[in-house]
Structures are given as C-alpha cells and as structure tokens.
Image (cartoon, rainbow, N blue to C red; front, side, top):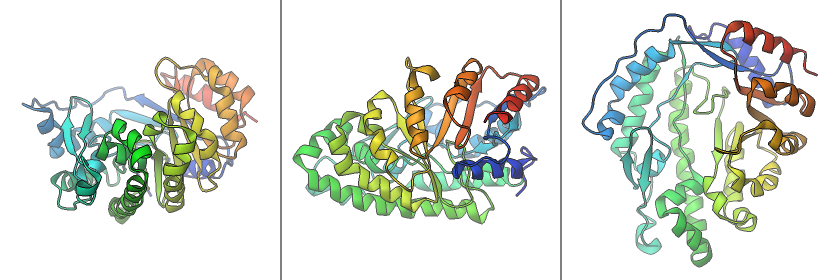
Amino acid sequence: MEFKLKPDYEKSRARYEAFWHREIIDRPPVSIILPVENPAPVPHKEYNTYRAKWLDIEFRAEATAIQMGNYEYYADALPVAWPNMGPEIYSAWCGCGYEFGETTTWSQPCIKDWETDADKAVFNPEHPLFKATVDFTHLLLEYGKGNFIVGLTDFHPGGDHLAALRDPQQLAIDLIENPEAVKIKLESSQEEFFQVYDIFYNILRENDMPITSWTPLIHDGRYYILSNDFSCMISPGMFNEFFLPGIINECKFYERSIYHLDGPGALKHLDAILEIPELDAVQWICGAGNEGYARWIHVYQKIQKAGKGIELNITLEELPLVFETLKPEGVWFSHIAGINDKETADRVIRRIEAWE
C-alpha cells in the first residue's frame, strides 16, 4: 500500500500493528504533524446557511485534499481524511432531526413515545444525509487514492445513539421507568449499526484503504472507536446492566478497538471497560481544565496493568515522567505538544527509541 503523503507508510503500519499487540518493533508509534514550508492556498467559499456549507461535499472534498498536502506526516503520523458529517449523523439516518452549526452538528430526538415511535426510528438507506455521506466518502477516495488515507465517519452508536433518539435526560429516566424498551432498542439498533458499518467498511476496503476514522489508528480489518458519553450521567450498576453488553458485542464485532473514555465522570466505568477481553486500548480524555499527565498517572497505569494499549496526548515537558511511570509496550503518542520542527522531532524520537 502506497500513499504519496506517507512514503514510509509500511514502516508506520508495522509499528501500529505492534501497538495493537502491546509489542515493540523499534519504538512505540509517534504521531508528529508539521506544516510544509510553502503551503498551497486552501479555497474558501461563502454560504447562506451552515447546512449548505456542510452539504457542499464536492467543495469540501476538494478543499480537504488541498489541505492534506499542506502538512508533513512525520514519524508515524498518518494522512487521514474522513467524511465528517457531525457526531450524531447515524442517529439522523435513523430519524432524528439534524441541525448544522458553524463547527458541529446536533440532533433532535425522534422517539417521543416508546410505543408509537420506537419502530419508526430505524436506519433509512434512502435518507439524503446517508447518501451524502456515501457520496462524500467516494469523493474523498477519488482524491485520496495513492495520496492519502480515507477513513470512516463518526457514527456514535450504542448508548449515545439512544440518547440522541430519545434525549439524554429522558433516557436517564427511561432506565428506571422503561428499562425493557431501552434494552430492546439497544439490541435492535446495534444490529442495524453493524450493517451500516459494513457498508462503509466495504467501500474503503474495495478501494484498498486501511480502516481508520477520527482517531487515526489503523488496521486492515474492522477497527473503530467505542464510546458512551452518556455514561457520565449514570451509575456503574446501570452502565453494566444496560450498556456494557452492547459494548462487549461491539468489541467482538471489530478486530481492533479503542474505547473513548470521556471526562472524569466516566472514570467510574473504567474497571468494567478494562475487563472486556476483546478491547485493545483506551483513549482517556481528561476534559478541559483537567489537563496534566501527572494527575492521571494512576489511570494510565491501571489501563496498562490491565493489558490494554494507551493513547497519550502530552507535552514535551511531560515526556520524562511518562518514561518513569509507564512501559513502552502498547503506548501510542498521538500528540506531543511542543514539537515544532524536525530537529526537535528527531531528538524526541531518539529518546523514545531508548525507552525501556
């Protein structure tokens, strides 16, 4: 597999494969993205509405392809473009109203009543936003073939999907008042999601792409990022009863997976997540105002002790403490703030190579 923007792709691919197995070839993978000296101008276009801006996929694909070439993907950074249609696009395909903002989107619940609406909130392959996402994927593939990697969109299935269909606060009440309705919908919507995932998976594989998404790890088979941001609102008992079985099924469905653990409110579920044998890694997001590797060492050590891989987003100054407190096997440096040139990058890489 060759990509113009990543001529050493196969070397990085081998390091990522070792990461999935918590092994080391020569060093852990390190993602460093640097701007090129003479970037090409990225075209700009004015729109009357945010919706029109988001749905101008022809222009977005063209601008994305130009922007991709304005960076150097140093060390193990990967040139990944994915058809971003907002974080609840799968729920829109299943009946939710969908609003477009300047930089994000949000859904409107479509299950007002479980008895009358639940069976209507299902995936619609004729939905215009689904077709737009498929078309966007194909457009990126035209630009990307031989140049850069094209990934999956941000699906947000499972508990977050139900929270979008029903409304998070209402879903929290449903866990008490309508538990069976929730469980039935979780099970049926997961079956739908697996079919939807495979539609996009097959498109990418038929075009000789590795599988990746908004978290740019890669695998040649099924890979994805699991999440349940709604879990911050509920107890471990309810999480384990309602959502853990689906997360386990999702882990079994993929060949490689990383769990997106978002915010201190989700930490209470970490023990249950780490007990899933099929889960490969954890992406711990501490949240704004909670930054600092030192304050979360115990979390990273717990993840590593459980035999899972770790995504690290740290600063250059925090690197020595990482060396002191973790083992290199199963660590991916997704970002190291403070690396702004190749000389610094090379020094950091040499130091990481010496980490034992």
